[in-house]
Structure formats: structure tokens, C-alpha cells
Length: 219
Length: 230
Image 1 (cartoon, rainbow over the protein chains, first blue to last red):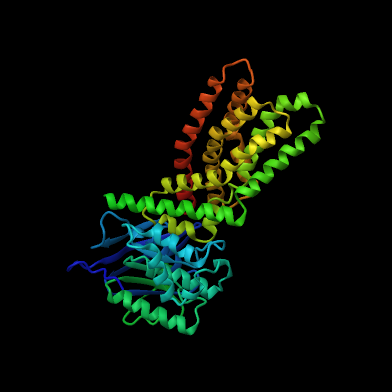
Image 2 (cartoon, one colour):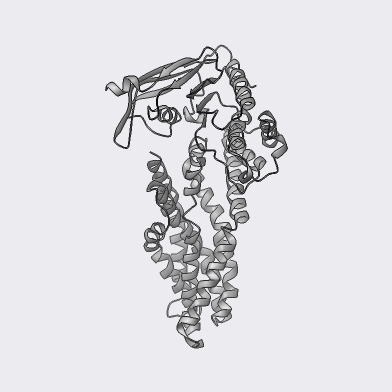
């Protein structure tokens, strides 16, 4: 795993007094969190409590009504979203392209600096999630779990310090869930940061829990 | 700095290749557009009747109308398909400015859809009894004018994402904006066959329209997409 600790600099991802309005409805308000390199936050809460909205907000895909998200110790020229991986409910794959072509595209597109070798990075990512044998298959033939694995392979093939995971274990079998747990631990040991929304156990040791919904409902 | 520029070009090349590959493999791009073009051009003589002199006179206009409709036919899913499968989220999280992404996607669309129409137009012109000079002039004006159709059309394609509604809404919004391109495209072709004005006059205006839409279209489409993601 690549290391994100440059010298002594420790990254900190901080969300201050965040509130979010979607479709005229206040989803949450007054949410604070702070997480340093090597640590993770697990977002929990009932359906509609705003777990996905918070992740999309950190990714910069939606804007907060109030508050801000800041990353200290990262690359100052890039936004938080440009230093993060986002794995949402959708798997961004084109059914007409093969598994390898899909992944190689994202490796080439998402890499900031010129990558050493996008094709070998992609192949390594596919091996890591157990899709090495299916590289030549059109992505349209993949099962839901395999599609999810291909999305996760993207995080391994392109090094970015922040991982925003929205129920990453959906459709994964037990072995793959275990593997994901190991991959996430390795990412944290390399100095990465993980924000994950989940309903079940993720296998993240020592994660802070951020419970959404209870406070927001009062406001 | 240089490394960033190299990485940006690599990212754009990857995007272009992906879009072109998808268009060719699904058959949603090149082939469908040309077949639709063929259908429109074939229908007109049936509607008008076997008046060869009339066909020769209105031939360039029919070819232009056919190309206009065919290039818009495949445009409405340009951003909607990326939005529906979550690709647009990741594209926004990439390090390439959205405006340049939009230009790249527009170029990929033109190469897979507009260019085949230009190449097919002389053959279809024969069906309409066009003289050789008119065949050449139509192909030339389409070559210069179809990029304008794509660059205007991407605004509608972005609106289809923002309004979460595709289908016929896109052509209804975009077609009025393409009227100047149609007017000067057909005028230039007619001028080449011996119209009242010299060929260069409407042709240079057509070139100007293409250049203008290449500047305005990407900014408008990118702004629409950013707004529509909210």
C-alpha cells in the first residue's frame, strides 16, 4: 500500500458545523467531525439520516448550506474531493467496455501526476479484489458483487488519501467483506483517512462513530 | 506544472477513447446516426414525388435537415448516461476542469457521429439528383457546420441531466438554437451551385458560428452540469 505520510506532516480532515438541505428538507445540522491520518469515522443512523449526503458533501458533489470541510496537511492546490475516492451506491461502469478497460479508464482519468503504468496498476487492482481472471469480460456481465469489487479496485489502483465509502459491503460475499476490512486497515496504516457509512460491522478497529439523525431531528 | 499538464492530457485522451469505444461498440453512435440520415433522405422523395428538378433544387436543404436531426438523435444521452451510473460524480472529482471534459466529450461525439454523416452525405446526395459541385459543397459545409450542431447540442444534453428528463425535451430546446447554422449551411451550399451571393460570404459566417458555439457551448454545458448536480 502507498504511504500518505509525507515526513512528519499529519493530515486532518475536519468538518465544522455542517448542515445540509436536500429538496427543501433539512437533512442534518450542526454536524462536526475531525479525523487524522490513520483514523476512520463510521457514520451510522437510520435511513434518511443523511449519511450519504454527508459523504457527498465531503466529496464536494453537493454544497453545505452552512459550515465547511477542510483538509490540512494535504495538497493545498487540490480540493478535498480531488484527493478523495468516493464509492457510492452506483458502480460507474460501462457495460460495453471490458472489466480492464473500465478500470484502466478510471486510473488514467483520476491520476493527478503522470502514473507510472496505468495498465499494470489496473491489473494489480483487479488481482487484489479477485477479478484478475475476468479482465477481458464486458462489464455488463458482472454480478452486483463483482461490480462492487471493480469499484473497490479503483481505490487500490489510484492512490488517494481519503476514502469516502457509502455502504461498501453491499452485495459483497463474506470473503470479500473480510478482504475489504484488511484493505481498509492497510490504507489506515499507510496514513489514509476513511469515512464510511454503514449499517453493519465493517471491521474497522478503533473507528470513531458519528451518529446522524438523533440531533438533527431535534432542530 | 509540466507533469500536471501531461496528466491532464492523459486523462482527456482516456476519456476520448472511452467515449469513442462505447459509441462504436453499442452501435449507438456512428451506425445509428448514418442509418437515420439515410431514412430521412429516402423519405423525402416519396413525399415530394418524382420531380427530379425540384429534388435537385432542395437537395442540399434536405441533406442539412437530415444531418441536423441525426446528430441530435444521439446527443441526449451524452451526459445522462454518465449521470445515471455515477460516472459524472467521479468526473467531477477528477483533476481536469469540467469545461475541458465537456469539450473532449463533444469531440468524441462529433468524431463518432458527425464525421460519418459528412462522409455519407455525397452518397446520399446522389439519391437526390445533386450535381457534383453541390455534392462537394454540401460535404464541405457539413464538415464545417456539424461541429456547431454538437457544441450547441451539448447544452441541451447537459440540461437533460439538470432537469432529470431526457427524450424529446432536448431536441425541442436545442433545435431553435441551431437555426442560424442551418440557414448559413444551406445558403453556402446553394451559393456554390450558382446562387446570387458568392460562396465565401455565407461560408465564413458558418465558420464563425462554429467557432462561437465551440467557445460558448462548453462553458454553458459545464455551468448547467454543475448546477444540475446539486
